[in-house]
Amino acid sequence: MLKTRMKRLADRGDRAVQRLAEIEASITNLSNEDLLDLADIFKAEPRPPIGEMAFLEMARREISL
Image (cartoon, rainbow, N blue to C red; front, side):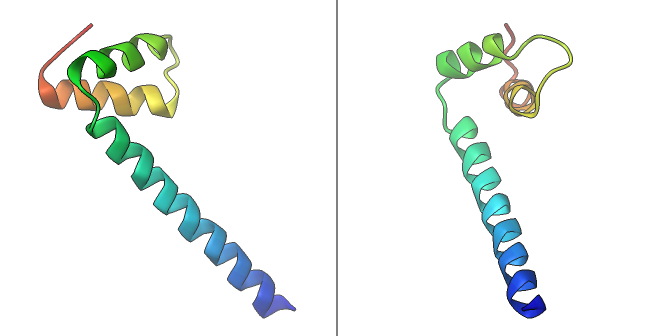
């Protein structure tokens, strides 16, 4: 029982990491206009994680709101 639970928790963690990587990749693949729209939605402080990702990508591309 414990092995099954540990395996299930590990699988859940692996899926969460994979999903986060997919989200980061989708943000990276946005056009500049769409990235600016996303950043505008999440510009309020404190900025949620998706907003941080958007602003980091904007900094990488050297664009701003």
